[in-house]
Length: 156
View (cartoon, rainbow, N blue to C red):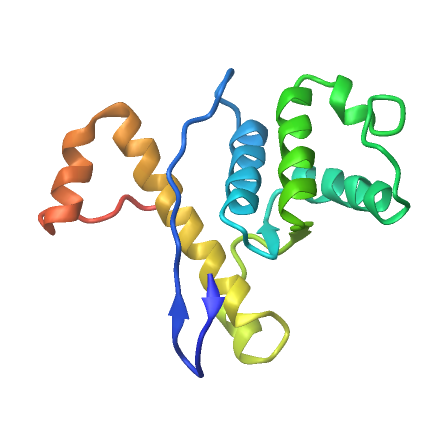
């Protein structure tokens, strides 16, 4: 999501599949990689696993080190295939590693200037799309009804 004006935002969505086991960390890594492929300057995530791993990746890039299992141990972990893909994508596109945002931020914190409006909106939109995808994975009919306006989005 890019800020294009005082109260106007441009939202770009990319739907993709999770390769391998369907877990939250793999979904978050896949999302971070998709953002990099779209050429976004930086990924924002509410997933601490991705943000911390991206910090470690970013330190290696700043020091001009090669990303390999010896200096980036996440490549040898269960999601190493996606970490390798993410580091490759970010190296090819010049994207900055992921930054952590607070998930489920309160609007009152945004209004008091304690949180970013862009991160607040982006996180809520991402959560809404995750709920839609979860419903669609079980039964595509409710999503078709949602798009048609004959059904409401499920509560979190």
